[in-house]
Amino acid sequence: MKPEEKEKGTTTYFDGIPFNNVRDIDEYERMSVDKTEEFVLKLADQLTFVKENGKYVIKCTYPKIPEAYEWSFGARVYFKKGGYISYNPITNFKENRVPNSGVFTKAVPISSSSEIEYFNIIMSVSLKKDLGGLLDKDTGAFNIVVEPGVSKSAIYIPQSGEYPQVEYKDFDFNKMFQW
Image (cartoon, rainbow, N blue to C red):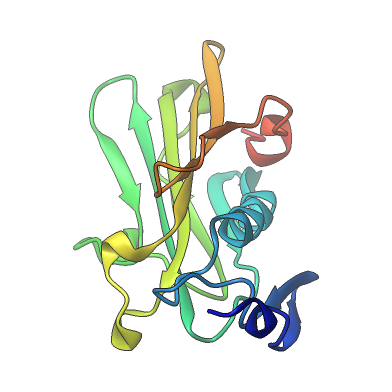
Protein backbone atom coordinates (compact mmCIF):
# COMPACT_ATOMS: atom_id res chain seq x y z
CA MET A 1 0.00 0.00 0.00
CA LYS A 2 1.32 3.43 -0.89
CA PRO A 3 1.99 5.86 2.00
CA GLU A 4 -0.69 8.28 0.77
CA GLU A 5 -3.26 5.45 0.77
CA LYS A 6 -2.52 4.80 4.45
CA GLU A 7 -3.89 8.25 5.22
CA LYS A 8 -7.24 7.35 3.67
CA GLY A 9 -9.97 5.26 5.09
CA THR A 10 -12.86 5.85 7.43
CA THR A 11 -12.63 5.82 11.20
CA THR A 12 -15.61 4.35 13.03
CA TYR A 13 -15.95 3.96 16.81
CA PHE A 14 -16.89 0.60 18.32
CA ASP A 15 -17.69 0.89 22.03
CA GLY A 16 -15.30 3.84 22.22
CA ILE A 17 -12.48 2.20 20.23
CA PRO A 18 -11.57 3.97 16.98
CA PHE A 19 -11.09 1.66 14.00
CA ASN A 20 -9.86 2.85 10.61
CA ASN A 21 -10.76 0.48 7.79
CA VAL A 22 -7.44 1.15 6.04
CA ARG A 23 -4.83 1.91 8.72
CA ASP A 24 -5.98 -0.72 11.22
CA ILE A 25 -5.73 -3.79 8.97
CA ASP A 26 -2.81 -5.69 7.49
CA GLU A 27 -2.25 -6.93 3.95
CA TYR A 28 -4.38 -10.04 4.68
CA GLU A 29 -7.36 -7.94 5.87
CA ARG A 30 -6.65 -9.00 9.46
CA MET A 31 -7.04 -6.47 12.21
CA SER A 32 -3.66 -5.01 13.20
CA VAL A 33 -1.87 -6.43 16.22
CA ASP A 34 -2.29 -3.18 18.18
CA LYS A 35 -6.00 -2.86 17.38
CA THR A 36 -6.63 -6.53 18.21
CA GLU A 37 -4.95 -5.98 21.57
CA GLU A 38 -7.14 -2.95 22.23
CA PHE A 39 -10.35 -4.86 21.46
CA VAL A 40 -9.46 -7.96 23.52
CA LEU A 41 -8.52 -5.78 26.50
CA LYS A 42 -11.95 -4.18 26.23
CA LEU A 43 -13.53 -7.66 26.19
CA ALA A 44 -11.48 -8.70 29.22
CA ASP A 45 -12.81 -5.63 31.03
CA GLN A 46 -16.39 -6.79 30.34
CA LEU A 47 -15.95 -10.41 31.48
CA THR A 48 -16.65 -11.31 35.11
CA PHE A 49 -16.91 -14.40 37.29
CA VAL A 50 -19.48 -13.43 39.92
CA LYS A 51 -21.87 -14.98 42.41
CA GLU A 52 -25.45 -14.13 41.49
CA ASN A 53 -28.63 -15.41 43.16
CA GLY A 54 -26.57 -18.03 44.99
CA LYS A 55 -24.96 -19.36 41.78
CA TYR A 56 -21.43 -19.00 40.44
CA VAL A 57 -21.72 -17.49 36.98
CA ILE A 58 -19.61 -16.23 34.10
CA LYS A 59 -21.00 -12.99 32.67
CA CYS A 60 -19.85 -11.32 29.49
CA THR A 61 -20.87 -8.45 27.24
CA TYR A 62 -18.91 -8.52 24.01
CA PRO A 63 -17.77 -5.14 22.76
CA LYS A 64 -18.97 -4.22 19.29
CA ILE A 65 -16.39 -4.87 16.58
CA PRO A 66 -16.25 -4.13 12.83
CA GLU A 67 -18.68 -6.26 10.81
CA ALA A 68 -15.95 -8.18 8.95
CA TYR A 69 -14.62 -9.66 12.23
CA GLU A 70 -15.78 -12.08 14.88
CA TRP A 71 -14.86 -12.88 18.44
CA SER A 72 -13.20 -16.10 19.46
CA PHE A 73 -13.67 -16.86 23.15
CA GLY A 74 -13.07 -19.82 25.39
CA ALA A 75 -12.97 -20.27 29.14
CA ARG A 76 -12.04 -23.44 30.99
CA VAL A 77 -12.71 -23.94 34.67
CA TYR A 78 -10.51 -26.70 36.13
CA PHE A 79 -11.60 -28.52 39.27
CA LYS A 80 -9.48 -29.70 42.20
CA LYS A 81 -11.22 -33.10 42.04
CA GLY A 82 -10.07 -33.40 38.40
CA GLY A 83 -11.56 -32.51 35.05
CA TYR A 84 -12.77 -29.21 33.70
CA ILE A 85 -15.70 -27.51 32.00
CA SER A 86 -15.10 -25.60 28.79
CA TYR A 87 -17.29 -22.68 27.72
CA ASN A 88 -17.02 -21.69 24.05
CA PRO A 89 -19.19 -21.28 20.93
CA ILE A 90 -18.41 -24.72 19.45
CA THR A 91 -18.54 -27.19 22.34
CA ASN A 92 -20.69 -30.29 21.88
CA PHE A 93 -22.34 -29.60 25.25
CA LYS A 94 -25.20 -27.18 24.53
CA GLU A 95 -25.38 -26.03 28.15
CA ASN A 96 -21.75 -24.85 27.90
CA ARG A 97 -22.05 -23.03 24.57
CA VAL A 98 -21.61 -19.29 24.59
CA PRO A 99 -22.35 -16.94 21.72
CA ASN A 100 -19.53 -15.10 19.96
CA SER A 101 -21.33 -11.75 20.18
CA GLY A 102 -23.89 -10.03 22.36
CA VAL A 103 -24.26 -10.95 26.03
CA PHE A 104 -24.19 -14.19 27.98
CA THR A 105 -24.43 -15.52 31.52
CA LYS A 106 -23.43 -19.12 32.22
CA ALA A 107 -23.80 -20.89 35.57
CA VAL A 108 -20.84 -23.03 36.62
CA PRO A 109 -22.01 -26.14 38.53
CA ILE A 110 -20.12 -25.66 41.79
CA SER A 111 -21.27 -25.03 45.34
CA SER A 112 -18.10 -23.21 46.44
CA SER A 113 -15.28 -21.35 44.74
CA SER A 114 -12.87 -23.53 46.74
CA GLU A 115 -13.69 -26.34 44.26
CA ILE A 116 -11.77 -24.48 41.53
CA GLU A 117 -8.15 -25.37 40.84
CA TYR A 118 -7.61 -22.78 38.12
CA PHE A 119 -9.10 -20.84 35.21
CA ASN A 120 -7.79 -20.48 31.65
CA ILE A 121 -9.36 -17.91 29.33
CA ILE A 122 -8.38 -17.07 25.77
CA MET A 123 -9.92 -14.45 23.52
CA SER A 124 -9.13 -13.00 20.11
CA VAL A 125 -10.63 -11.19 17.12
CA SER A 126 -10.36 -12.67 13.64
CA LEU A 127 -11.67 -12.12 10.12
CA LYS A 128 -14.99 -13.92 9.67
CA LYS A 129 -14.53 -17.32 8.08
CA ASP A 130 -16.99 -16.55 5.27
CA LEU A 131 -14.78 -13.58 4.34
CA GLY A 132 -11.69 -15.72 4.00
CA GLY A 133 -10.70 -15.87 7.64
CA LEU A 134 -9.11 -18.99 9.06
CA LEU A 135 -8.48 -20.02 12.65
CA ASP A 136 -4.83 -19.03 12.23
CA LYS A 137 -5.71 -15.66 10.70
CA ASP A 138 -6.11 -13.74 13.93
CA THR A 139 -3.33 -11.34 14.82
CA GLY A 140 -3.05 -12.21 18.46
CA ALA A 141 -4.79 -13.58 21.52
CA PHE A 142 -5.19 -12.53 25.12
CA ASN A 143 -4.59 -15.38 27.57
CA ILE A 144 -5.57 -15.18 31.24
CA VAL A 145 -4.62 -17.94 33.67
CA VAL A 146 -5.56 -17.75 37.33
CA GLU A 147 -4.80 -20.33 39.97
CA PRO A 148 -6.54 -18.86 43.04
CA GLY A 149 -4.10 -18.10 45.83
CA VAL A 150 -1.11 -19.29 43.76
CA SER A 151 -0.49 -17.37 40.53
CA LYS A 152 -2.12 -15.09 37.99
CA SER A 153 -1.10 -14.03 34.50
CA ALA A 154 -2.66 -11.91 31.77
CA ILE A 155 -0.65 -11.97 28.54
CA TYR A 156 -1.31 -10.67 25.05
CA ILE A 157 0.36 -13.01 22.56
CA PRO A 158 0.74 -11.55 19.06
CA GLN A 159 0.49 -14.14 16.27
CA SER A 160 3.42 -12.61 14.45
CA GLY A 161 6.91 -13.24 15.82
CA GLU A 162 7.89 -9.66 15.05
CA TYR A 163 5.96 -8.35 18.08
CA PRO A 164 6.82 -9.26 21.67
CA GLN A 165 4.33 -10.73 24.12
CA VAL A 166 2.89 -8.21 26.55
CA GLU A 167 2.30 -9.21 30.16
CA TYR A 168 -0.20 -7.06 32.06
CA LYS A 169 1.18 -6.95 35.58
CA ASP A 170 -1.46 -4.35 36.57
CA PHE A 171 -4.42 -6.37 35.20
CA ASP A 172 -7.41 -6.10 37.56
CA PHE A 173 -7.95 -9.77 38.41
CA ASN A 174 -10.18 -8.81 41.38
CA LYS A 175 -12.63 -7.09 39.04
CA MET A 176 -12.84 -10.14 36.76
CA PHE A 177 -12.78 -12.86 39.45
CA GLN A 178 -15.26 -12.09 42.21
CA TRP A 179 -15.92 -15.65 43.40
